[in-house]
Image (cartoon, rainbow, N blue to C red; front, side, top):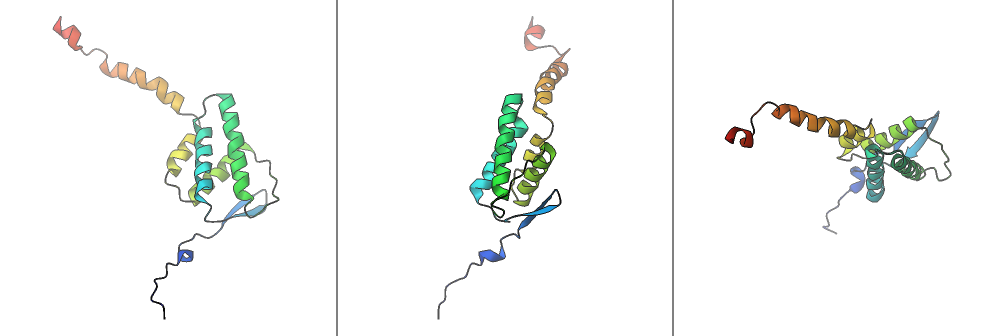
Length: 141
């Protein structure tokens, strides 16, 4: 009689994910390999952070390829030409479903580029916050 402890990983694995697109149900394993999930997040971040058209275009192509690769795990012959909204919705949904901790940050970055807004408004806020206050050089003279 064995006294070995059993670690039942199957009890912790999530169920498969169903992605419904264009009237079709596409299956994705609930537990995709970590390198694939991390690459999906990297592609999603790269697209969300892209500020130049050419960079965004390359990032979008990588994101599309990664999403298709994950969808093809259970549908090996799948061919899809995803539109922009569908691609971002599927990528965001998969990242959420995989339980990645960076989901909120990734989803925020996938929206309209807010980095430009922050980078142009932050210096003016700093100037307006210090405007009218004497500096040490001005008050010491």
